[in-house]
Length: 289
Image 1 (cartoon, rainbow, N blue to C red):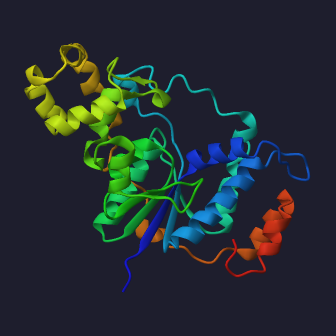
Image 2 (cartoon, rainbow, N blue to C red):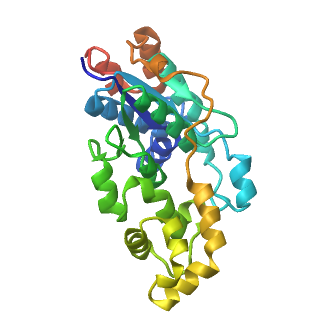
Image 3 (cartoon, helix red, strand yellow):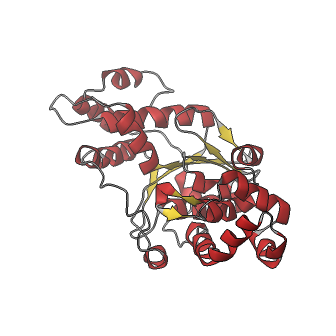
């Protein structure tokens, strides 16, 4: 008997990519529909390539107070969601309801932590997990049973070996690697002068951050040793910021996310409302959503 396969979609990650990839598209009544259409297409491709038995779309619920307490400027540089994009989120949620796909959002929690908690529990229960996202923070979750898949170039599976090729370290050391380098996309500064290659070399040579601190006098050259010593507090803070939670209390079990038949009548009305003629025609094909 085959193991169940859970596909988790990083909702806002895919929505944003769709919005900027398809700049001009509107419904018959003039409402913008580019993010909606792009999300629908990405969802279909991911399901076709991943052949999941279970699916869940996870949306951000805000920034946790704990992370903001550690770094007030955490993600502060990100501009507000464009209104043309924000207005399409309810329609995306309506479409997901039409196809009877589970969604998850927790107030005050980030999608990455919800994804980490859901994926970890499913993997422990024996499921194979695929996470659709381009967020490198999720590399820390990758294992033989949890893999990432790019929503833009599916099927592009990222397993442990691919994480090593991309970062220079295995998944279990990704948070330490990020703690040293920082993450500009999240407005988290790293150690000045220590880039990805140097961070990977340090972790490879010493094995872990703890071992690095314990043998700091052995770090060469002296410039790198001084930088590490001067910014140790920053690195430790970053490690706490970037380590994803895998124990969030979730309002649902992953087993409830079984992929079932869509509500075709409501789906047909939805496609007619938004003017998605190609998707409307696809309803006649049993493999299309």
